Image (cartoon, rainbow, N blue to C red; front, side, top):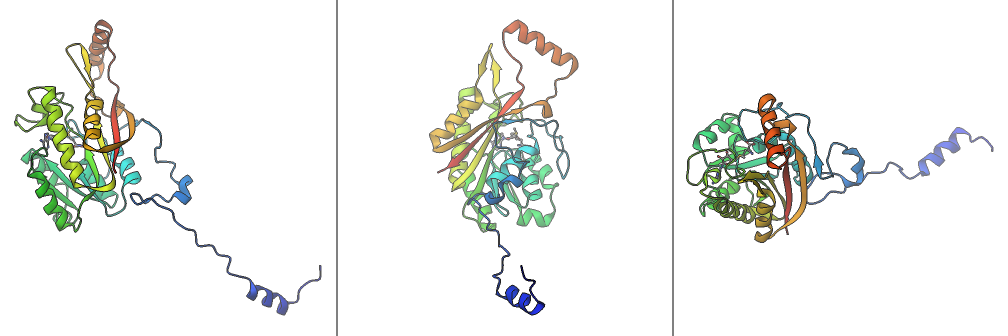
Length: 291
Ligand SMILES: C[S@@+](CC[C@H](N)C(=O)[O-])C[C@H]1O[C@@H](n2cnc3c(N)ncnc32)[C@H](O)[C@@H]1O
């Protein structure tokens, strides 16, 4: 092939179309994950078995509240089901894991918690500015009729009509007693009453959630009178009755937050062998969508 002289080469290059390709981003309306680069998210879980070796105690999190959930749950759910700037609504805020992680990930949060002293503790975890712009804490009974007005007022301040993600991490009936208050879901006179109050909270959450958006129920089962009480599936069914579409049932290991060690663990092993049951090593994360 004849060699091109410099003048000809410049002319040919001038005629070349600009081959730099602008890569298109493909996202869902509820997530910032770029589906055109889906291989670049190896840390995001897409199967139904979640195992975490230990709790993440960095970036504002600690294990100071008995009954809190591990932050990795929020990290996984927020990345899949929220966009930057979205408002997460947590109806059982506890020690504020959902709110802390929301800020860590550039989201915002409205949290409702029954115990005033707990709300005060959580407030200390945020700056005054953050408590105006990014985190709104409400001390109220999440099962009450009035809680929706309170949430709506905070949504107005945040210039949102509805929340974009719902977190429900209720007491697992009476397994951990959080207070003596009659409105406390851990203090019900029966499991039936627990289910009724849970359904009211879930309905309030449903009403405050934007259509098309997602909700997570984090819960475990319990044993009573020699049999399993399936709190997880019973509460999940309450959510389906309200109108949520069930999208996933995830099983998560409890190694990261189990407390029974040594002698206590041996005692449970004996009880299991003696009573014909198995020791819980898992809890559930149910994922729903409001359609
Ligand atoms: C399992 S804990 C949630 C822990 C939280 N996810 C965390 O990581 O810290 C349940 C919380 O629900 C609160 N609670 C119980 N009944 C409630 C109600 N009726 N309204 C609002 N909060 C309630 C309890 O005080 C407790 O802090």
